[in-house]
Image 1 (cartoon, rainbow, N blue to C red):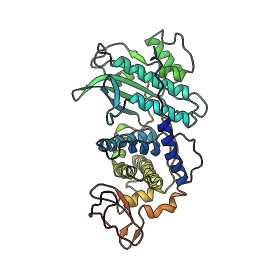
Image 2: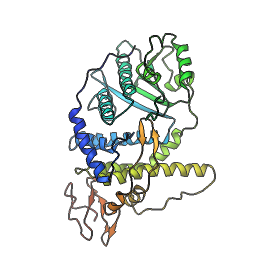
Image 3: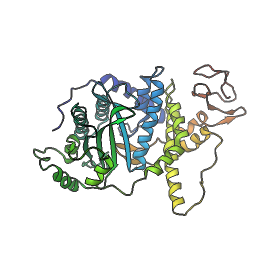
Image 4: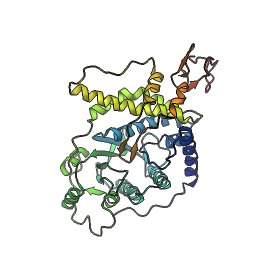
Amino acid sequence: MSAEKLPSLDFSQSLDEIRQLQDFFNSSLGITQNKRILSYNPVLEYWKYLHIANTSDEPNFRQYEAKQVETALRERLDTSKSVVHYRIINNQGYNELFPDEPFSVVLERGASYRKDQGSTEQVRERAEISGWQYVFDNLLKPDLPENSKFISISGPGIIEGTVYPYNFVDIYEKCTVLGETVVRMTRTASEMTYQQYVERILSIDPTYFDNVTGSIDAWFLSHPIHFIGKQEGVSADEVFNTIFEKRLDTLTEETFKEVFKICMPLILNYINVLCQPDFNPKQIAIAFNAVLNKADIIVEIFEKIKNGEITINPLPQFRDIYQEAMYLGTKPVREVSGGCGVSAGFSIDSLLNSIALFGAEDQFGPLSFSCPECGFVNTRPFGQKLPACLHCASTKVAC
């Protein structure tokens, strides 16, 4: 039932490049614990950026990165549902915002990276890849009807100290969006136990566990279920509600969208900092910390307003986005378990020595500011002005 063994891909050069960036990032921030697996790692995103910088793909990368941050926040804030579309190019699935390589390659590289970082759940990670490939091999068959669906159960990891504590059901379907045939994946948070999953799946397919081997989490991931039944007009939500049970203590989609909207200025600031020619770990860490802290604060504020504890937003007013980034980016960041790793920021101990990089002022104003022409974040020496943007040479820099 599972896909055939995928050909081995050589990511040695990519991993060497990532290691060099990670080592520089860690040394810049004074990080000595190198093997923590993060659900979102700015180093990996910067490595991706390096490969498309100054090409026609760079604008797409910024959109792609905003979606990556959105996904990271969804995992961090424990949202109830998320939706991803994959474009079909040359009979392979590609990320809808960044179709530069098949998504199967992205998954393979991610698994290789996690292995390089010392992952103890490689069997599960390989199972996820084979299951994803199985879904696409079948959904892309020409004779498979529109709205055909496959169900993948992504339950929590079963080993002690798993980096996969969350419980999802992913439903894949072939559909048409804006005239283009795509694969839509709808992920919904579930509260079911593995025993309940077994009982429900056996009621759908009594032969599903014939010849079962290995751990239950890997078996489910490597063996997606073809949903047989009325397909046309039946949504992924309806399929989920018919078979599974939704978690009720998650963040609602409406609340998440509002949180994401409020955080967007800091997200765009982070992406601007990330997309600079010079790799500056301290600036990146501060900008990313600010996004995580702002999201946490807004969720807490919404909850307090809902409970009648407060009636107004208690956040201080900031002069501009850079002052806010500095204020929030140098505060401790809450660490939580994400969907596929730890959702965390970076220690402020070494960042506090970098205040001059973000938000500090002299008689001419802030030392750090964006160019109005290209968006590059310029940093000037204390007591000196810049005659032009350090990136595009525009003389419209606001210093």
